[in-house]
Image 1 (tube, rainbow, N blue to C red):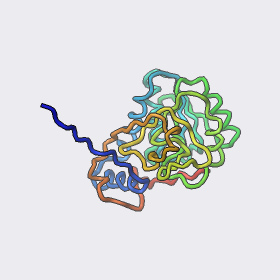
Image 2 (spheres, rainbow, N blue to C red):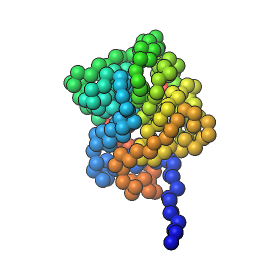
Image 3 (cartoon, rainbow, N blue to C red):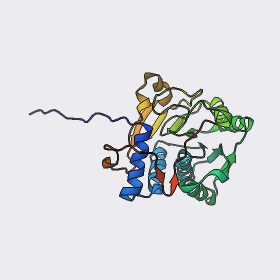
Image 4 (cartoon, one colour):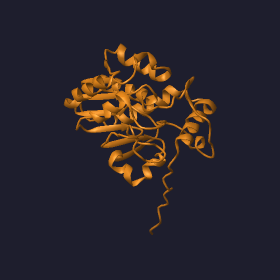
Length: 241
C-alpha cells in the first residue's frame, strides 16, 4: 500500500525575522549565544574534509563562527590560518571568546587593516585546500568597501565554504553589494535567507546546506523584533567598510 509523503515547504526568512528568532532563543528560552555560535561553527566545519584551512574573519558574529571553525580545524590537526579583516580589539562578546580560545591553542592570526594587506593575505591563502568565508554577515548595508572589498576581489580560486551567506550578498534581496565571494558551499543557519530565492544569487551561494544550530521552531513563529543579542552582545550591523 502506497502513501504520500508530506513535506513542509522550505521557509525563507528575512534578516529581521532571523534576528528576532535568535533573540527569543537566547533571552526567552535561555540558550546561551555562545552555544549557538559553537553549533554554527561546528556545522560549517563538517563540510571541511582536509587541510590546510584558511579562515577569513570579520569583526561580527560571522567572524566568531569562523573562529570556532579555526579551533576545530586546529584540533583536527589541519594546517590552520586566520586572516582577520578587523582590529582584534574590536572583537567583542562571544566572538572574542572564541578568538581567544583559538589563540590560546596556538592558532595563527594575520591582521589585515589596509586594502593592500587584505589583498596580499588573501593571495597567500591560495595554497589552502579550503577557505572559510566568515567575513561579512547578514546586516550589510551598501556596497562592500575598504579592506573587505579588497579581500573579496583577491579571493583565490580555492574551494570555499561560506558561513551563513557569501560575503557581499544582500540577505534579503539576493543582490550583490558591489562584490561577492563565490562559494562552493553555503552553510546557512536554521533557515535559508530570503535573498537566496533570487536566481542571480545561485552562482554565489553554490550548494546550500541548511544547518540546525538549536533554535526551536517556536522562536521564529510570528515574531518580528528590533534586533537580537548573543549573550549580552547586541548584534552589530556588518557595514561594508
